[in-house]
Length: 441
Ligand code: PA5
Image (cartoon, rainbow, N blue to C red):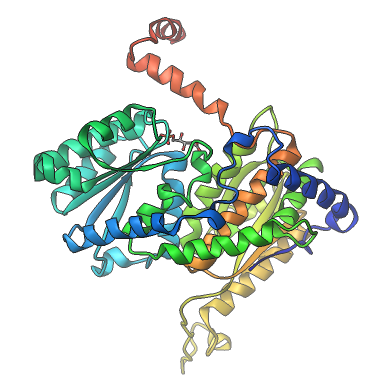
């Protein structure tokens, strides 16, 4: 279950019902597929329409790799082709698994930058590991993953031989188009299709997210069960629908002049979830000179860096706090007979008790400082609830984008840098642009 607490958002008391009505209208547009961009809403009913064979296929690849003693999976992709998987694996994994040496399978990410140091260090890691790779690109032509895949493919082919390499490479791409599709066909790699109707940032519950999550050892059926539960809740045309409430509140705050939405977590495992959320909302809403700027903080860590600005800086912010109600583990603060640190007043209390009080204290302080608070609550951070959170934010984003009057499913602005980069890299066909750009240096 996901619930929305808007008691920290004062203006919602007076104006909320108007925005709830608008959000329900936007929900209708989304669910009836009558809005702009409606050819990209294949994600909307994905959990309830998911073919469980697909989940089993992903789990089988993961099991086969584990049985072959593969202990490193390099997931190659950028933007929506990696952030969901990275968010899920970070949220679900032991924070110190690497240092403990207990992790049988390591999943790392590449192709999300063009840093040469990063590439070289990836080679260092691959030298000492037994490697497989998943390469993900919907267009099949994105430069960053294409460069990384060429490097990793060649490494795998040289280390294990061409025919063994084909067992260690899985592609996830368009069903018909793109260089990656051509390459996968030519080399007969195992492949999964990204449906035309699902954009990158809405693809975490497709093989794009699911195969890497399975490779990391997690059960896909639980994550989809959680998403299914929230899909049913978020399709209800009621004022209790959490996606409706969240979309309504953030649009109200935007109309009142707030420019920045900070996603706040109180568990460092959610730092990459925030990166996924930033892409989801930033790329969906930031267009036509509109849209909240999505940013994030991880507390209580960032209360000691960004806390001052949030409390007293320019009043252009509101916060959306993810409240995970129950910690998964139990650590109690011990009593100390000397009490030299003066902490015996906390003896016998759980660390999570301190965390929850810090959250409450911060919410109240920030309300007093003029930073409205939306609180998104869920029971715990496991596969089931994480699946629900992914779907909830996707649905809310679709509703919110329609309320804002933009197409939440395209990303025309991403092309500008790509064209310039192709020109400056000397890609054939970009000669005119290259000479124009060079004159500007
Ligand atoms: O959400 C999106 O559509 C983008 O972030 C893409 O996922 C990203 O640009 C990578 O594109 P591709 O998967 O085509 O390589």
